[in-house]
Amino acid sequence: MRKTKSTLPHLSLAAVFTALITVFTAYIGHIPMPGNLGYLHFGDALIFLAACLLPKPWAMAAGALGGGLADILTYPAYTLPTVIIKAMLPLAFSARRQKILCPQNLLALLPALLVSAAGYLTAQLILFRAEEAAAFGLVLQSLGGSLAQWAGSAVLFALLALALDKASLKKRFEGMKNRA
Image (cartoon, rainbow, N blue to C red; front, side, top):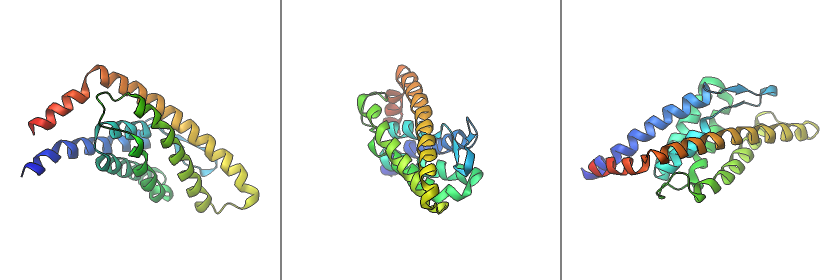
């Protein structure tokens, strides 16, 4: 019974993050990209934040489900690649630090960029069966979009993390888990 109680705060927070990731990906700051290359959004900022507050499996599930649901609502062809890519984004982040905005989590933004850029480029080359002549243009367009996507989400993540650290959110969440 104790194990069930201790997972309730994680389950609850993962569900909230899943909903926030879906909304921030599909609707808030949603900017379609030309050439059917998906869209820019701020949902990754919430995946990064979830990765700093939840154990990895919970953050990975929230990222995969939230991103997947957003793609079902907006760009269904990208749903499977998104589920895989968004599940991988939390891997370099740490929820074991006292602060959300710590050096490890700032550095984790770089592997997140690489995973996202490589993952979506691969998905686009497969989805659009790019021929060699068109592939170079697709690569440049995809990488440019990935960089813009990452930069916006990284800035929003840093701002949210700073605000939540000032509000001692991690300490409050730990207290809530201990009471459960």
